[in-house]
Figure 1 (spheres, helix red, strand yellow):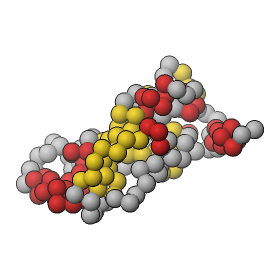
Figure 2 (cartoon, rainbow, N blue to C red):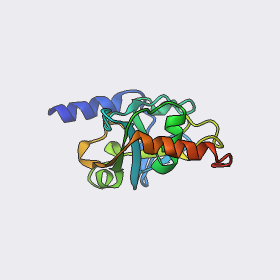
Figure 3 (cartoon, rainbow, N blue to C red):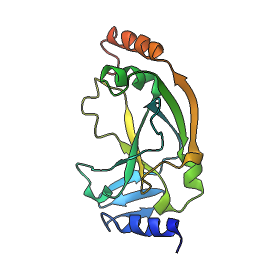
Figure 4 (tube, rainbow, N blue to C red):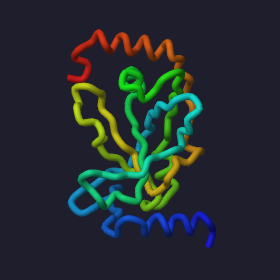
Amino acid sequence: MTIREEFLRAALTEGTTSVEFEDNELRTGDDAYPEADFYGERLVAVGSDPKTAFKIEHPFDQALSGFYGVHIGDADEWLPVLYRDEYLSGDAVLYKIDFRRWNEAHPPEERFYWTDDWHVMDRTESPDSMIVFSRLSEIPEEIIHRVRVIPEDEALDALASLEGDDDEWD
């Protein structure tokens, strides 16, 4: 058995057995999560690894334990919010991730799926966000595309514009 096969076997048995894959969805009991069939935008600090995913601890669907996710959203909208809330400082890097390309080449249990971001509690204070997740603890490098470095000055200008607009996401 190869290392990849061992990893997949271990990943598929961790956490839960109540996950099913059908009709381009991942199903856990009453919940269904569609396949991520799009490019996602991801902002990270310069020097951070864009492949890194966090371990899912979903407050409402424990069947997602054993999965890993990344936050995806519109970079233009999220840039000032991430600086405002001090998740980013200094220069940032914008990446696009081609989830569709990965999903087309892999079986359902290795694909990426998505859900609304349950970490965003107040939708009036931040733009739409989603979590794209899979059994992989890292996003495969071959589907990550570096778009550009965003200088801190540009991010701070976006933040200043945001602070002057009270009803951005109402």
